[in-house]
Image (tube, rainbow, N blue to C red; front, side):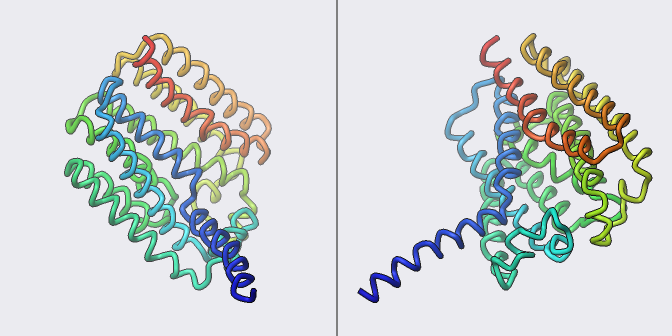
Length: 296
């Protein structure tokens, strides 16, 4: 009876521990990065990639994104502990203690992903390696997105593309431009939304070292550039009406969100812009690319 009671007590602890380790991998961010990588592969194959190759690509991107997210969580643990928005995460809250316990699984996932990327194509490997080094080694200096965040953000797209079509083209260039503009818009909007929280943690790089009224002007410009990049992709990839409608509607929403933030300068509108830019915008744009190839 005592043995059975101990076994029953161990089960919930095991599942809680597993949930903590999964949380370290930032599953929402990992899913979004994997999704855009899948869509890039589908675009590279003009809609119909090999199922086996696509599956291997998905595994490589998912494992690599999760592993790198876990490593950045480890590197940012001390700053996260100082911020109300992030101090509940597994490492700063000491749900995983000592924090070094996350290194073997996260490093393992990253290495496996890079190995699989090499098997897919050397260009996939170099794209994944560049993204990993940019995220982990190229830490935050003047800002958190130039150029390291943009390189890391483009890695899933490049892996997905090169796994199917190991050559450069205007299509993949505009896909990277789209991500390159989206990254600062997404990251800086959440920083402005939580400005006091970041400053209290000792973070003072852009956009926090600018006045709010000036920083939000940059976000409006970025929303316009994002809209332009999505339309440029329409012409570069020769998409059809479905993508054009999705790009215009989502682009107008992003520009309106930027204009509203410029008018109000309040953190709540910056937070709305941040949330809108994630799956509602980026997810819809990439999904529209695939649907356009399949349905039209």
